[in-house]
Length: 267
Image 1 (cartoon, rainbow, N blue to C red):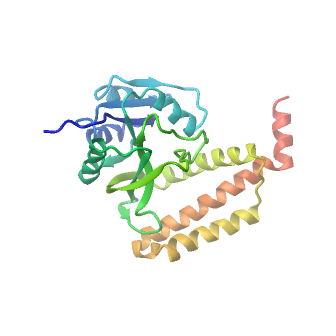
Image 2: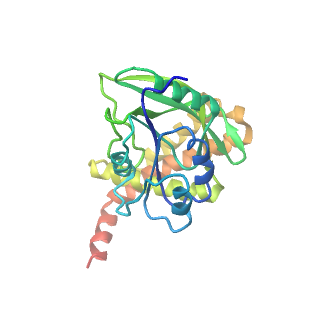
Image 3: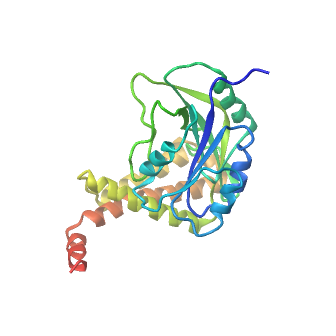
């Protein structure tokens, strides 16, 4: 039996994930060297569940965005490689084998993308541009990290780095129901708008309508979402709504009346 050349950590940032966390960690804890969980203030049994699988459970309630939270979580990792998971995700056997092969390899400056297959409202979505959804999740811990974006954070990739795709899927159990989708969409839209506002960007309702229509056409027609049946139609429609919501939120945050209201509320 060959000993793997590198050690591997799984890292998660979580909050109130008692519904998913056990099933997620069950797919990794037996074959990784380290599990790091950074909590942002759970009020359910998330901590109790996490501590069954790892001693490296940390809490940071000062929320500065998804990017900064991931950067802090990575600072606790001691292993050679870091593999990121969300609590509502599961690692398939094929992906496990692919990741372990990397631990036996000796490729420098290489990062790895996984394919994510999402279960949405009772069905796996295999079209709509959602599968194969390539996401960069595995890389040498000292090589790079996530950027500091408030939302939709990404791993920093530079010109001297190579990216390879790994066989196997991450299974993603994404939304419990429509209400869960709408709540997450509103949260992401607010963070996205705040981030754009900080960059000096402005939004308009007409821009929101244009991008929303484009989103629906791209997902349902160009990315053949209609092959996912009614689920594909619903997801394309909801995604269009979420797209409009982002620009509407930015328009509200950067409008003169909103700025006056914020100033008056401080008085």
